Length: 279
Ligand SMILES: Nc1ncnc2c1ncn2[C@@H]1O[C@H](COP(=O)(O)OP(=O)(O)OP(=O)(O)O)[C@@H](O)[C@H]1O
Image 1 (tube, rainbow, N blue to C red):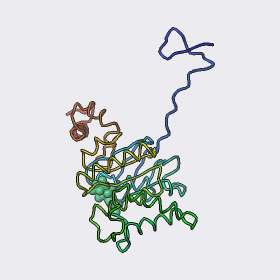
Image 2: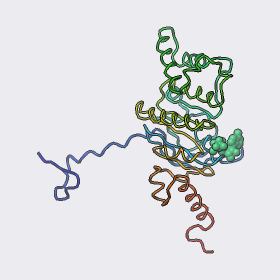
Image 3: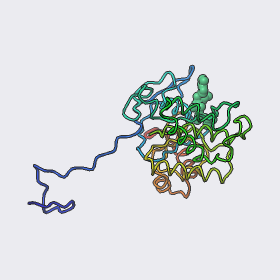
Image 4: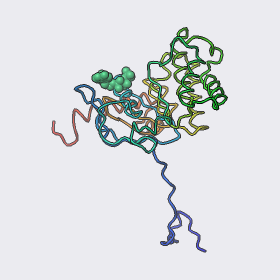
């Protein structure tokens, strides 16, 4: 028997049995040359990126840079999308993806004249219909309400909740089907610091315990530090795709916000004085 240990240069690998490389996990989302036009404008410009599975990827950039458009493309609700966009191994928008993706828009989509529990029960009945599933639905609804810390308001009408509480009802709806991919468009806007911290703890639990992939947009840069990876966007382009630590190291900065500003300045300088240009 021949033992081959990686790094032992004196013992070449058995050509007939080369060491098996660690499998590269299939990305949860893979985009190639992804371009989106809205009205007369191109708002996403030939994007190439991959979102790794089971991690939290933050989508950050200033207002209007195209974060929501990118998320809408991924969940299959955006028109005029060209290029390649694969989600959980299928083309974005494929019917088979519907039950595998949870999507929370910026505007909470809840029924004001129903209570929190009734809202959840309504969506649970669509996801998991039938009398036989009643107990499971009840459990799932109770768990989702607890996940977003709304148990004490479960019987309140959604119309009587604060903006932040209504957003959390939307998030609970997205958590109902235990989706493999959660796409959350600015889920922490308008929330107080304690609730933001608790929600980020919940996002990490979802990623580690349920092995779900989370794509979360924000323009609050301190939230970037809580992500495993970041896609930094600006004017419909990806400025950087890396871990927060690698971004700080690469730009020799202390925070992701400083790294982002550094990259913006660098991109502006390159656009003004492209390499090889004579001034
Ligand atoms: N319905 C529309 N028709 C035409 N252009 C649009 C439409 N909606 C958005 N846009 C443009 O598309 C670009 C990207 O918008 P998008 O909402 O994706 O940005 P965003 O980064 O999510 O912004 P924010 O952080 O403010 O939500 C913006 O320039 C916006 O003006």
